[in-house]
Image 1 (cartoon, helix red, strand yellow):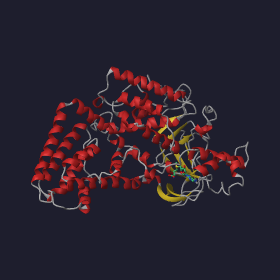
Image 2 (tube, rainbow, N blue to C red; image 1 turned 30 degrees about the vertical axis):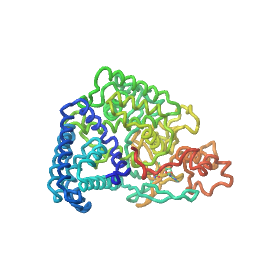
Image 3 (tube, rainbow, N blue to C red; image 1 turned 90 degrees about the vertical axis):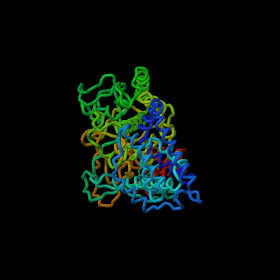
Image 4 (tube, rainbow, N blue to C red; image 1 turned 180 degrees about the vertical axis):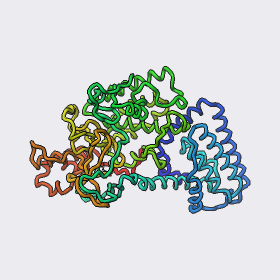
Amino acid sequence: MAPATSSRTLTVLAAAGIGALAYAVYFDYKRRTDAGFRKRLRKEKKKLDKSVAEEATSAPASGNPLGDASVPTAEIIAAMKSIKDDQVPTTPEEREKYFMAQVEKGETLCSQGPDFAIEAALAFFRALRVYPSPVELIMIFQNTVPEPIFKMVLEMMRLDVKGRVEGYYEVFPPRHMSVSTKTVEITDPSGATALKRILVADRDFTAGETIYKERPIVSVLDPDLEGKGSHCSQCLRQIDDGAALRPDGDRLTSAFCSKECEAKLKAESQSLLFGPEYAIPIELNPNEDPEYSKKREDAQIAFARFVHESGGGRTHVTLVARFIARQVVNETVKLLPTSHPSVPTETDEWTGHGYTLFDHVERVRFLELNADEDEAEQLRAILKANLQGLEDFVTNERYTVLIGKMAYNAYGISFAGGRDDKPSPSVRPEDVELTRTPNGTARQVGAGFFAVSSYISHSCDPSARPTFENGDSEMHLVATRDVKAGDEITVSYVDASVHDDEDVVQARYRRRKELARGWRFACQCDRCEPRLNDESKVEPIVSQVDREGALGQSPPVASDTTTID
Ligand SMILES: C[S@@+](CC[C@H](N)C(=O)[O-])C[C@H]1O[C@@H](n2cnc3c(N)ncnc32)[C@H](O)[C@@H]1O
């Protein structure tokens, strides 16, 4: 199967990413600690090997026990349709049983000749779907399953992944948001073309109308406000003096505006990253012992100190940490029976249709940055102290990509024009984090990653404006002018107004400099064209971006061609 398990198949498998990770950790734990489990696995493998060996000796001259049939794609598609609505078991014990039963079934059908080939492949494919390390299992199948059936299994995997990849943009953004994404070709000032995905309106909107509302997948308060008690760490809402709820033992000294916000953030990420209680239920967590709990506390305190002390408002680091924690928790609770108290009763719209939070983040583009390996190490320490094995998810490479995604896509959250008491950054101007916000990053109270709004391109004369008119982190995207169905929706990534202390040319310089520093492109909108005669003097940074693609670093990478693996 060497040619078929190309890097493409492996990338595709790895795209399952953390989806299978929690189960893999559990599975490994069982393999290490449960002798009976190990014995059953070995027995299954032996039986399979034996049956294949017998098949091989009684095979026709071609050496192929099932003849030379090529992979019948139409029949495979039909077979896959028949299992589309299959309920896959959730708890580890049920999955284990299901896995064993499917392998056994595949093995029996294999020995019944070509008429049962597709059914056999389907059984192996089902087993693969619940196996925590599909790549490992594929390697086993390669050596144990007759080649024609093995090829069918690979084809099934290919079709399965293709369906998931292609089906994504049919269900996201959700219909009720009245917007869609669309791929367009763009040409940069040097004449190079590239594809990008933009957001377009599905219907007409009038100026002032709210196009949609969107809650962030993850959000974070600016570090100087975290622990102060003035804003809620979950919804970012301003809290009246003395009204903040402060949970005991929280390493970040976070504050909440309500019990609901406290419970929500604890369940999503706070307990795992900064809380004294274990986020992963004891049924799945063999590490809940005093030694680990001390390690966990130390790791959490170290990370909380880092968040508080980070210069220049390092919100991206906390956004990534919260995202990873949320994904870990989501995937872990899937292993519990639905009646377990840790399993949420409501499904959120970002994890519907079989997609995970990871699917949303994976598809958006990112900046190639040099992420700090110490930060990744701190996150790994926390994950490991929560559940040994989880740290494997945060490779330096994956961490760097996630930081680049947050840097490229996070929106600044501010209320009523924003605040004016944010401390000046203590890092070099080129290292200052920028978030998309028409008020300017310096006026935000925090930042959020919004799955749909990530697709919106910039214009200095935008058709929409992100507002937070409820006074919390829910974005209301408001049309700044009439928008027709099919029109592209744009926002200004930066403060595009002309301040009292600057003229039009200075304002233009300021916004183009921020666009170049934060997003590495030279805007070509009507307000930026025609270009000024002596651009190199007026806008050295923009010119440098035009020349080099970025500030001495690589140009952005299109997400359509990337996966975080
Ligand atoms: C966060 S992505 C925006 C999402 C965008 N729809 C996409 O997928 O390309 C930001 C990047 O989109 C591109 N971009 C956005 N607005 C642009 C504009 N007005 N002119 C040129 N490139 C733009 C730049 O490459 C920028 O770094």
